[in-house]
Every structure is written in structure tokens, then in C-alpha cells.
Length: 525
Ligand code: G4P
Image (cartoon, rainbow, N blue to C red):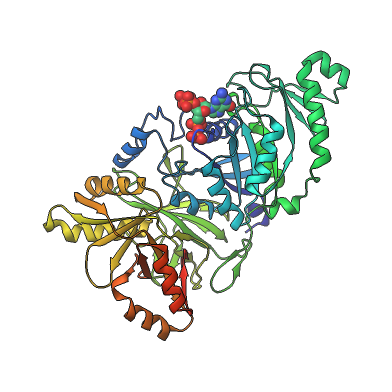
């Protein structure tokens, strides 16, 4: 396998608070690369014209993107994999997991709103994984906040050093373009979303007199601010960017396709190609000849015509070829990957081969679960796929007791998929569902009825918190389990979980059992 196939890959996600412009930017990125030819193809649009499956009705009804998907395109010499993330704050577990499969992220901030709640949460995940972030401040064609304030806010709230690469000249009706600080160049703004970015007028080395003559007061203000900000911020340091401590900041207007090319260029020039990934056994380098991959997302019934579930796999090393035999570490089973798909604008295309950083989809009937590692035979298990302690709990039962068995099977699938967390109390009682966002219950209830023909009744459970329990000493864990049996449940992977109504109960248990660890995050192992 040639090194360059790894080196030319860039795998990233666009993250934002809802309505900041993620969908618009994604569309422009794809348009720009020639991957799609009409805007409006990317899902998540309020005016969405198609439904990939019935349960996505919820997405249509609410105008939010519940599902994620993957798009691949080429730009310059690079192969870019763009992973879409659902933006709604109620439905973020999936988003978090998608972030484990990328090497960089583009953070879109609505210039009028600044840093918003969801951005903060997503940033936390990126920071904990040291994911480099390119920041795009959007909607400069509107009246937005003062650019200096926005930079300050990013630094304060997100705890990264924000390094402006461009600076806006005016805003709203007066938005005239951006000044590229490094290149001493002005890119002139021209409204209209048909421009593909290539024919933007650039003015090199504009003197102050010429600048004021052409742009008036906004030029003077922009130059003053640039002087101020370059004096106050450190120089861009790629190593600090790769560690997630510095973020280049670009200004623009996604809807006008202005500033989009610069994002792609920054990703190719600055963002890293796929790097090594840790397994429980050893670090796997992308340059290794043998294929390895990790399932970071499973989605059932993506297409009702196909009636399957698709495992999304990030290629971590080697060269994937269709038809190769792959071993699932968890089950020890080997299967032939004959049917492999990628998703480009929702058209299923057969993949012949793939390289590290690429995402492939394997339709299956339960062979693959969230967090699974695939290899050519070596028993490896990739780490780092997070499950978050749920914050809301509901009990669930089938309305028709005769459908209880079907409910159990359906919940097993939905649990494997990570759509919801399923807890089976150790000493009987109703199954408890745990979610990070309330919308997850709605989606699951809808899917149970639509896909599995089980109508359910859900009711608030008495639990408010859960912690996965672990201990160095298995005999202590067993003692704890015996002592608290009525408080414990098993999750979809049979990991013991302590359920509590109040944080005080957890604290009390912690005090009495110092050698038991109460985990808020579970990594697949
Ligand atoms: P999201 O995926 O982050 O939720 O945001 P999305 O792209 O759907 O954009 C949210 C709204 O912001 C949309 O308007 C979109 O047209 C608008 N928008 C995106 N980029 C820009 C920009 O650069 N300038 C301006 N002025 N607006 C922008 P909407 O009216 O809510 O939806 P729609 O009817 O246009 O689909």
C-alpha cells in the first residue's frame, strides 16, 4: 500500500449549534468539490425532499438531522471524507461517536450568536480527544457581533487560542470581503451562491490609502483590529493546532459560498492525515499493510427497501478490498465483506477498496455491533468509543404483553446500535431505557412501532443517574454486586451499572466502597 494514499486522506466533521449553518456549509463544500451539482441534496434541510426511511419522518417533522452520513470527495490532491453529524442538542450521543472517527473538525459559529451551548459540548469532546479544529465564523453578510468580541469569546469559553487567518472588512450590508492576514490579500465579497469560489477577486498588498479609497471606513477599522489582534495573539503554531490548543479562525458567509475554499485549503494544508490509533493490545499505525477498522456507528433500516442494518467502519490501517475475509474481535467470527457501500448523496455505491481515513458501510444482520474491531485475523480491540452515562430514564413495556419477546429482541438491536441504552435490572422488574437527550425516547418509540411492530408504553423511571461500576479486584466487584443487587442493572454489553435516584446515593456508595470505581463514561472494551 502506498504511503501517499494515507497521506492524502483528510477525514473531518462539521460541528455547530443548530442553525449556525452546518448544513449550508456542508452543501457548499460538496458543491465546491464537484461531488454534488445542486444545493439541497444534503439531508437535514428543512425543505428535505426525500426520506431515506420511515423513521426519518421525525427528522422531517422537526427539521433536524437525526441521522449522520458520510460523503467522500476529492479536492486538489486530497481525498476528503466528510462525516455529517446531527446537530440537535437533544440527540448528541451519535454525534459524539462520529467525532471518534474523524481526524479534524470544522466548527461553525453563527457570528450573531457567538459560542452557543451545543458548540461547547462538542468542543469538550474534541478537546478530550485532541482533535484539531478549524473555526469558521459564519453569516458575515448579516449584522453580527464585533469580530474582536467573537475571538475573545472563543478563547474564554472554549479554552483554545483563536488565531485569525482572515479578518472581515465590514459586515451586514457593508460586508466587503476578508483580509487574509498572512498573505496580505483582500478577497472581495460578492453576494450570490452560484460562485464556486474560484473566481473571487483578490487584491494583493493594498496600501491604506487605496484600501480606504475602495472600502472606506470598514477598511480602517479592519486594519486597526488586525493590528490589535496580531499584537495580542501568538503566532500560528501547527504543533499547537494539532494538539487542539490553537484554532485558525476564518470569517465568511456559507450561504454566499464565501470563505468555503479557504476552509478546504486549511484542512488540506494544516489538518493531519490519519494517524496511529490505540487498541487494548497495541498502537496501530495507518501505514501497516494489514487492514483494521472500527465500527463507530450502526444504523438499522437505513433503507426500508434493503431492510438491513449498516455498520459504519472507519478504516484505521491497511488496504480494504471488497471480498476480503474480516474477523470480528468480539465474536471471533470471520465473514467475507462482499457487500460494502459508501454513501454519496444517499446513492449507494459499491466500494471496491478503501484506505485509512475512509469510511465504509457494511450491511449486516447483527454480525457487527457498535465499537467492534475488524481485522484480517489479529485480535485487536480499538479503544475510545464512548458511551455516556444517560441523564434521563424511562421504563418500557409492550402494550400487548404477547409482544414482549419481540420488544426484547428489538431493544437488543437498538441497544447494539447505540440508539438508546438498555438496562435490564438484575433482580427483575421492567427494562429501563437511558438516554442523553429526550428526543432519543421519541425516536426509539417511533422505530419500535414502525420497524418492529411493537407499540410500547414508556413512563419516567425513578432513576436519575447511572454509573458503570468497575474494580481492580473482581472479588470486590462481586461483593458490591451482591450487596446492591436491587440497584444494579446490566447494559446492552452486560456491563454492570449502578442506578440511583440522587447523586447523594452515589456518593454514599462511593464512600463505603472506595475500591469500586463509578464511571460516567464507558469505553467499548
Ligand atoms: P444548521 O445545519 O447548522 O442547523 O444550519 P443551516 O445550514 O440549516 O442554516 C440555518 C439557517 O441559516 C438557514 O436559514 C440558512 O439559510 C442560514 N444561513 C446559513 N449560512 C448563512 C450565511 O452565510 N448568511 C446568512 N444570512 N444566512 C445563512 P433558514 O431560513 O433557517 O433556513 P432555509 O429556509 O434557508 O433552509
